[in-house]
Length: 87
Ligand code: FES
Image 1: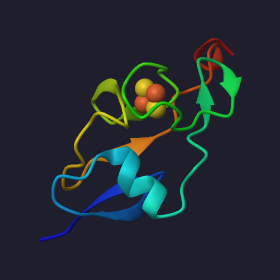
Image 2: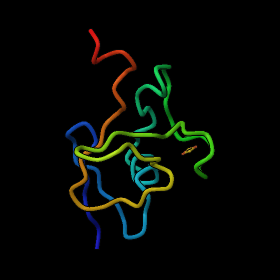
Image 3: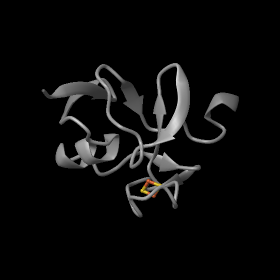
Image 4: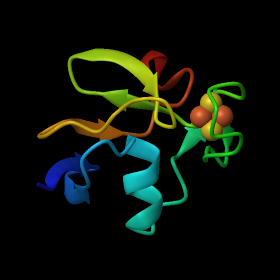
């Protein structure tokens, strides 16, 4: 049975056992926003080593999309830019 999570408010389908990154890539989402304040966050290593795929989850700590299983109803988005909350 497939499920859905939300990326920037848009539904993204996932298959059982699929990671967040795999579902996003299959949906055509390559740009994950900013990585640590630099542009171009994306899946690079796919094994949890580069931190390039870290995404924000509503009401939880950020996760590596390439390691984290997709779950029904997750609300995900890019990390906030560093300093954005100090404007
Ligand atoms: S792609 Fe490198 S940690 Fe996820």
